[in-house]
Image (cartoon, rainbow, N blue to C red; front, side, top):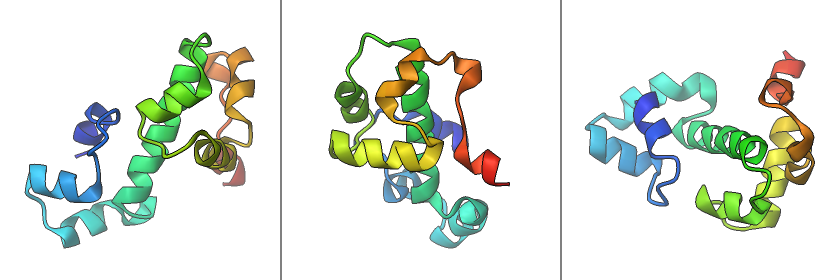
Length: 110
């Protein structure tokens, strides 16, 4: 299931319901699998944020809004807020980082 989500991160139709329908899992099974992640929707959002961070580092010439839109975030401002909550850095500031330097706020809180 994680590989399926990873492969579909740029698909605007990716949602918990589309994953359930495609992979024929029950809602209860998926809930148990992703309970520690905050649910499948939270897992998808965190994977999209991580993918966005990767793309910001790898493609500094791309606009933040284009990367956000490509990963199905509704607006650049909502993407920026979510990104800052996840990594404690603004997406536009990430262009100076190398992939090994990417901060992860959740890891710092543990």
